Length: 285
Image (cartoon, rainbow, N blue to C red):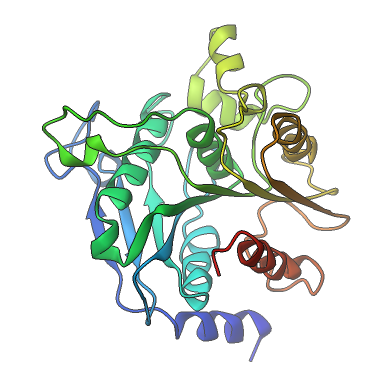
């Protein structure tokens, strides 16, 4: 039996039955139809054993804002998080070119608000909710971590009263900058379309919008990544460092883009162990 299969079986053993939750049961804002692609959701993966004050992680699969790698950057990761005793939620956000910014960010912010507003139901603490994103999903998570608000206390919708700020970020080989020369053109085009406004390109280059309130962040990347250069992680790390935000970054020498848990690579597959140590240092384990 392969290492990949063994790890998947082992992690899945810590999970219970999943449940799919609509972010907007009565229809999402800006929806262009009622098909599956028009309905953003969270798939909840509760751990087999949970306790009050637990941790919740919203997982954002990548796919260049055109598709979702929701198996190796979604379900498998959720199962692994369950093995730590964390509740995991895989986000199905709307995609380009059918949907453009700010729809994707709105979906991510709504996901954070929803999980926070129902934290007691999910067995987690409302101040222990993070986002984990890969590639374009990493860009979405970082955008949520640099563009958030405290909620609308006067809203008739109780979900909208909650803050959209994640409490921590985990970013795997993230798209980060939309500025030359490190921008991932596929993600940029899918999210912003042809000839986007330069002000919007700058606004969504998240390394330029880090403040002291940006959440603590763990990053990993590979030097060999030809799709999204490691400078995307490096630029964000340096911005976090300058702002005094706790951050940890690992740049592995070898490995392609899009590895997920990297279960077939004996070196790169160490990143989840490094992340576990970071969780422990942050008091989340």
